[in-house]
Image (cartoon, rainbow, N blue to C red; front, side, top):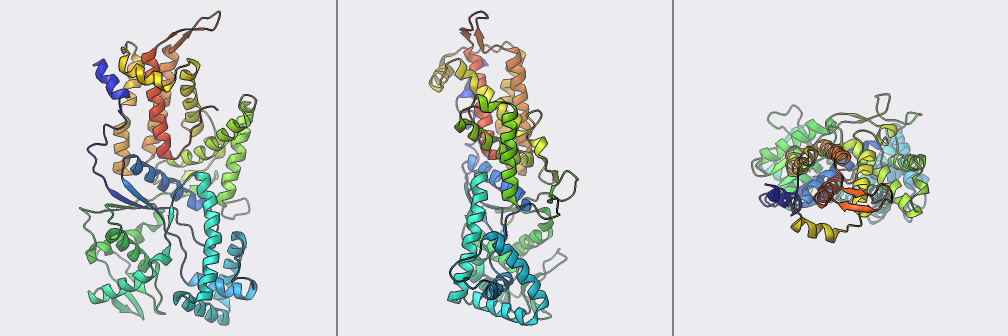
Amino acid sequence: MELDFLHQLYSKFLDFFSFFIPYKKVVIDFSSPNIAKEMHVGHLRSTIIGDSMCRLFEFMGHDVLRLNHLGDWGTQFGMLIAHLQDKFPDYLTVSPPIGDLQTFYKESKRRFDTEEEFKKHAYHCVVLLQSKSPDIIKAWNLICDVSRKEFQKIYDCLDVSIIDRGESYYQDRMHEIVKELEERGFLQMDDGRKIVFIPGCSVPLTIVKSDGGFTYDTSDLAAIKQRIFEEKADYIIYVVDSGQSVHLQTIFAAAQMIGWYDPKVTKVIHAPFGVVLGEDKKKFKTRSGDTVRLIDLLEEGLKRAMDKLKEKERDKVLTAEELKAAQISVAFGCIKYADLSHHRINDYIFSFDKMLDDRGNTAAYLLYAFTRIRSIARVANINEDKLQKAAGTTEIILDHEKEWKLGKCILRFPEIIQKCLDDLLLHTLCDYLYELATTFTEFYDNCYCVEKDRQTGEIVNVNMWRMLLCEATAAVMAKGFNILGIKPVQKM
């Protein structure tokens, strides 16, 4: 029994459950900011949850396509370019910075709603954009490039990899969608619009507007068809807020009605999430009532993480490089974990004070626990080679209840991962990691791993079976952190 336990515990126990899970092509649509607008706190959840879901499927060896469905096409860009022609003469050679672009966008919307001549000019720019007029496309590309560079700063902070594939990518495919729906008799005319009624859905999809333009319905149908037929996806997961549930369910139902996919073969899933609330339990806003810019939120996280580390006087024992690494680990790890540790469907209250608290179920507590576990082998002068050799030769003596409790907790990791794959709820993994860390603390407080002479402080005995338990705990925590997108450090 004990030898079997060791085999499971250390000899590739992290992989034994993957052999019977078939390889899948998984498309995950997440983050999805709008071009010419800054990313705000509303994009935080989709970005963090989507990245973690990608990591979960990648951990299992699946082929994951991480897609950023950018809002980069449509009437708003005709409005913006028309306004830039009036207010920003260099619009063909350089784009305004993202903050100015957002201001220009608001101004263009106001003019569009109040000035008839400007509205006509904006529509003309839309026509030129859709017909790919060189000058208009050049201006549009400059706007997109500036926006993407700003988005990338956020993704770099959060260590998120994603492929941009905005609505513009599907423009040519939208014409094919209209043609297919017309040929198959699904389209109906309604006040100049071309619409599709879906059985069981209360609101029809608008495929072509009365002015001949396409809609979000059209681009979303083109996107799902491309993902099914060109990407050959087995799973398509939309990490989009709960407010889009009716729209997405209608898109999915339409794709089934048209015959693009069989839900028994291809899984198309909406993974909804709640909103981020302030500590007043209202939508998270700045004091002036504006939406919180995501870059400001991340910078505030870095500042507060450093303050916390200095409060604990870590700046006196860590090198400048180690302190910086700890700051980044704590700041972004705590922001991610605070989100992922809550049930995805629920709203959650954003509180730096709570997420940076190193007591309770927080990333700060887990990161400190992890560095403590890693330091045990370091103090005992035992490297990875010694541990691997010990795994094959050490007699395991599990004679303490806390050893058994920790061992059994470690072996639940595959079951936890499978549950997360089944329901796409990451808080289960967070709860497990917290349980593992607290179970380890019980074990460590009751079972000596390294015994020292009380007078000299010299190491007199190393319990290798317990060192293996320490190592297995750290290995599972590291895998869990990776899935959550959290980067632990060796010293904190």
